[in-house]
Image (cartoon, rainbow, N blue to C red; front, side, top):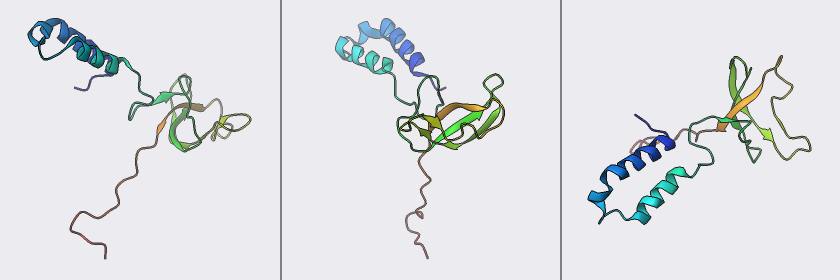
Amino acid sequence: MRMTREELREWFTDWMDDYYDFLEDDLTPEVAESVLVALSTPTLTPPNEWVSVEERLPTDEHPVLVFVGYADTMTGFITTSSYFCFDENPHWQWDGLVQDEQRTLFWMPLPAPPDRRPPEGEANE
């Protein structure tokens, strides 16, 4: 089971309440506080998670993965796009190119490209 950062922070806090007396010599209050601070600090973009355009926009003009669709039904499509943040009128590449009321709703950084090297011991011929 994968926990969110909030769930992990809550679990650690509960664990500390239950077991801190037993670990007092090994786990100082400063270390425990550092763990809680780290678990409470937001990340810029969690890996493999969609970011709402209402929450944050990309800060460069590199391509990102986007979900373009209808906000009321969440139907649409996934494609790559760029957010032109340095333009006089910042906009998404797809703005005005899709039908009806579709718009870019979510984005995430592109994953790293696949490793195209041959496995060790095998040479390209």
